[in-house]
Amino acid sequence: MKAWFIDCTPELARLFDSGAAPVPPGVRIHRGDPDDAAILAMARDAEVLMVEHTLIPDAVLTQAPTLRAIVFMGTGAGTYVNAALARARGVPVLTTPGYGSVAVAEHAFALMMAGARQVARMDRDIRAGVWQPRGGMQLAGRKVAVLGMGGIGQAFAERCAAFGMRVAGWNRSPLDHPLFCADLNQALHGAEVVSLHLALTEATRGFLNSARLALPAPGFLLVNTARSQLIDPAALIAALDSGQAGHLATDVFDAEPLSPDDPLPGRQDVTLTAHAAYMTRDAYLELWRRTCAQFEAVRES
Ligand SMILES: NC(=O)C1=CN([C@@H]2O[C@H](COP(=O)(O)OP(=O)(O)OC[C@H]3O[C@@H](n4cnc5c(N)ncnc54)[C@H](O)[C@@H]3O)[C@@H](O)[C@H]2O)C=CC1
Ligand SMILES: O=C(O)C(=O)CO
Image (cartoon, rainbow, N blue to C red; front, side, top):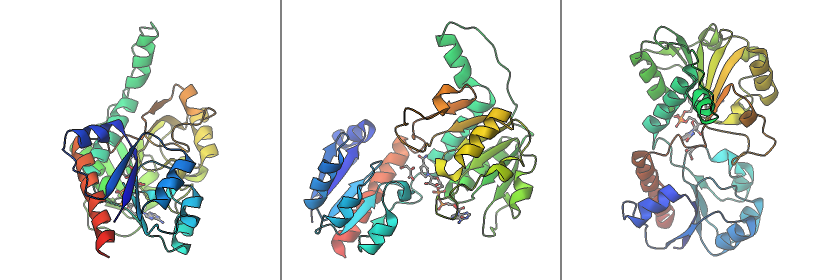
């Protein structure tokens, strides 16, 4: 069976080139960033498309009759593939959940610490020739609301508890976990840090709306390694402008790479990383292993 793996990042290319991430027979690798026409041409030349952070054009689902499956190298495929159209066309979109919960939780922690201590702000200052020490928030003793206690949320919550934070880990279904909090409003109320770990679905789009953004403590720190679409964009900007949200530390954006009119890079009250929370060597190797396992599952079906 033939497959194309598209959108190979330099990090992954290094793992291929060093032999650390073996490529199964039948899988061809496209290095770089293909345009829609190139993606369609690969889809017409394969039974399986293996993709990372590539927007799959709808034409792939309607004009590539040999395509049997798309394997999304990651958890949240919904922002990259039109899931409803894929379902309607009978093209399964397979994912690789759980490959790197610790890596993402550690990155969320890095964002929380950077935001709490204004690390990126002072780095920008110093590079601009400004020596301006800036105060921060001590994390020990602070309340953190962890929204979504799946694999990543639990790993993050446990790390916060180890730092002496007061953790309210909300999950929509009850959990037998010592940090679980059943009441969303209670979890958010007075939180000094809020960290998002929900899956993006039609039900969770815009989940953090203006009413929910009003519940944490004034000046709270918002951390997002999940999906930007979980936050209502107008409510987010209003919360930052009013100071209700004191800082946003985010790894995920409405458009990736960022659209030139995205307001976030122009602000000082944000810390930004380029959707890299999962990118540790350990997580990447496990991610590739699971991606190949999904390819094999299609081959054997
Ligand atoms: N920035 C990055 O590099 C990465 C980001 N992610 C994102 O992190 C997030 C969490 O991923 P995992 O912990 O691996 O997923 P998971 O499947 O283990 O957890 C998902 C959570 O979302 C909740 N959820 C799902 N539908 C819901 C609904 N309708 N209402 C309320 N809660 C709902 C579940 O109860 C669960 O708590 C996802 O958005 C995923 O796409 C995942 C990997 C890497
Ligand atoms: O696994 C995911 O969902 C990611 O965001 C990284 O691709």
